[in-house]
Length: 388
Image 1: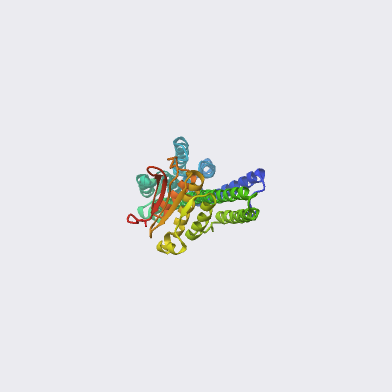
Image 2: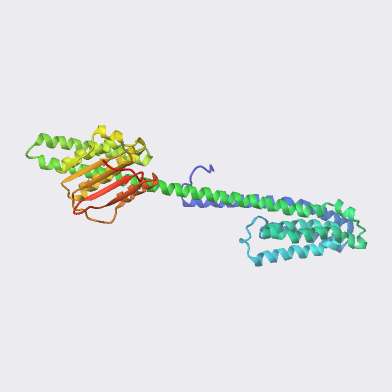
């Protein structure tokens, strides 16, 4: 099955998961079986030094050792906390006991089994395993020399390379585990970044849809209400308002599609022009900058100020019950002021979303009632940005 194609249903997803788990388990089993090739060296030593029942016992010990390595808890590739202490010490004790039984049957060659014990030790304790690894290496070097009946010299013990292979196996195990843990941490970090990216995208879409639909639906409501009032007295003007409602609805649909795909473009000039028409429709006297006045604003701030004007004028039309509204611009600030009721209500989604936009740009948003009446919304991108 192509891994890029999503399963059709829960049953297929479960089957895919089971197949993947089985495949990973098979690969791990094969990977762990590779070091067992070194036990052939021990088997050859059993053939050389043991006869009869002793040889059978030596072979049986090797088979048991290999099976424990394959089917026991694979502590070599596990994090230290994944296997309990009881599991670890049980398996560790079995390995040590089998090595002790094999030692008189295979003599110096039995120390090859210490390579496996070394890997488990290094996997479990990392750098703290150094004393145990050193002890095993010294034992592989000195024990064959210390037993006269084995007729081994120090040079022969070194020639077997086992005393050198034991610390090398520990170092390699440590490096491999560090790489595995680093890859695991990297995969987790990537997954977390992906999750945060998706979360941020959901926040962005929710914020943009609120800003777009809140403003657009307010505009449509205002235009439709005006058309209803003019229906009897001025049908031609009413039809013109209905046409504008239709245009607003189409534009809203396009804006929603653009917001979902991340290409919504808000301009300060467009929001001022739309706001002027909406304020006129609801009977609020508008004191808004003209097209030539927009040039005073830093171009890098114009889109953000467009969002501020959109949110501020939408709230004026919806909640302020004002008779006049003014927008004041400077190079690095925008201010929307009305003479309405100035109710100090808790900030809604729109104001919270605007605050996030302003904070992301490094600015400050100040919103609150005025005395004796009215409301002010101010966005400033620098401490010295005055109004005019």
